[in-house]
Amino acid sequence: MNILLIEDEPKVAAFIKKGLEEQFHHVTPVYDGSMGCKLALEQDFELVILDVVLPHINGFEVCKQIRKFKKELPILMLSALGTVSDKVQGLENGADDYLTKPFHFEELLARIKALDRRRSMVLPGTVYQVGDLQMDCFRKTVTRNGNIILLTVKEFTLLEVLMYNKNRVLSRVYIAESVWGINFNRGTNLIDVYINYLRSKVDKGYPKQLIHTVIGMGYIIRD
Image (cartoon, rainbow, N blue to C red; front, top):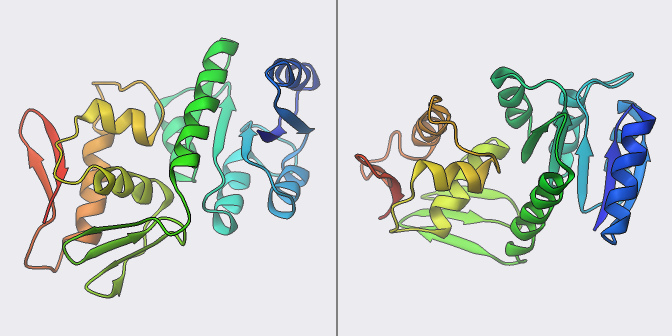
């Protein structure tokens, strides 16, 4: 993969670059948020690894700016800020995954592979349909009965997972790992919160509900 690494600590950047290049990835390191954002938008990368605490522009803002213009570009946030609120902020700003420092390099590689698999699943022309709800994964558009539905990055990814697995009950653990790439913390209600976000945009105002709760098992989308 062609990877952009935005990390302000040169030793950490050198460690990551060396390890990834040993796995035959090509890594371009930059050391501040402003330059990282510029390169991400102007050049073609297959993955951005992004620190949070950066000079000039912090990682949350960089992530938000990238996501405005490159909705399909995978972003992995890598930060010493490891509270639940930090992770939620990163994910809500458009990150696909969030890994806290210190980390095992094997886990970083595993997350990169997972993001690459997820990216390669979406082919040009892929369109999912459930009833009158339609998702164009290449154009990143969602409509219901011809009406455009505006979704955040995570809401779109969650709906994509549901529609790809339509008529199949998905557990909260499966959803968490597929959408956020993180081990599910049973003490949080993150999945339920995002399901409610989706329902308010996808089902509200329509006579037929598509997203359903299966008590004790998880969620399903069906027409």
